[in-house]
Image 1: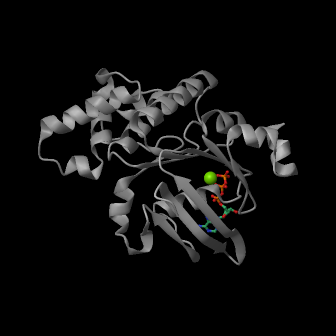
Image 2 (image 1 turned 30 degrees about the vertical axis):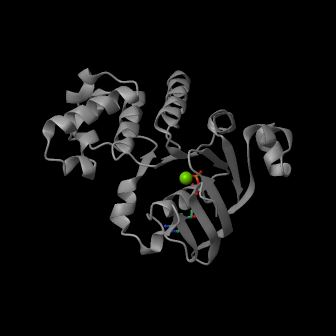
Image 3 (image 1 turned 45 degrees about the vertical axis):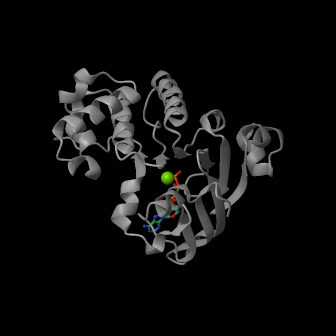
Length: 242
Ligand SMILES: Nc1ncnc2c1ncn2[C@@H]1O[C@H](COP(=O)(O)OP(=O)(O)OP(=O)(O)O)[C@@H](O)[C@H]1O
Ligand SMILES: [Mg+2]
């Protein structure tokens, strides 16, 4: 493991109902990478993602974040350090946008209300929204706006790692394009490490500094977009990039 490694997964196995879902998976992710993950439905993408923030645990294998085995870490602390954004409305419907974003534990704990307000104002701008929406409720926003608020909330803990599970799946093409440009900008600006699951190969190739292709619980190729395009590792990848 090099100093630059932020996430390392070693010999990860997961079985559900006697069915092997993840088979001896090994993975190294460097600080500041933007990893896109793609593969057929049910191949284990979400399962792997959730292992990184302890929402799921492997049957066998070890996971290290910044060199620390997550087995030895407090799971609440771990989740606090890792942003998690999923498709659709994960916002609390009965809370304003402002409350939704500041709900993140380390903002709640802050006594200084002005400071919290400042962070929220900054975050809402980071995701390309106007402060005027802060007093609205989620149902008073469009799907794309809600998705942006979801990202703002995931960023509120100033995480080193941002996990995103098909975050732009439910929005129209134009909004999706805007969100893609936004997340690329955020990635550069905040130097956060992103792992981003998508069903869309174009999105995977456009956003990823490296693309991880999974099939049946295994990594079939993990490389730069141009390499994936030029030298697909097998027929599965070849079909995908066609
Ligand atoms: N709690 C569970 N109990 C039993 N089986 C599960 C459980 N969670 C996931 N699985 C199974 O594990 C496999 C991998 O699921 P996972 O959610 O990781 O797939 P995915 O690659 O994210 O798929 P999708 O692209 O459809 O989101 C699937 O076959 C799924 O049915
Ligand atoms: Mg999934």
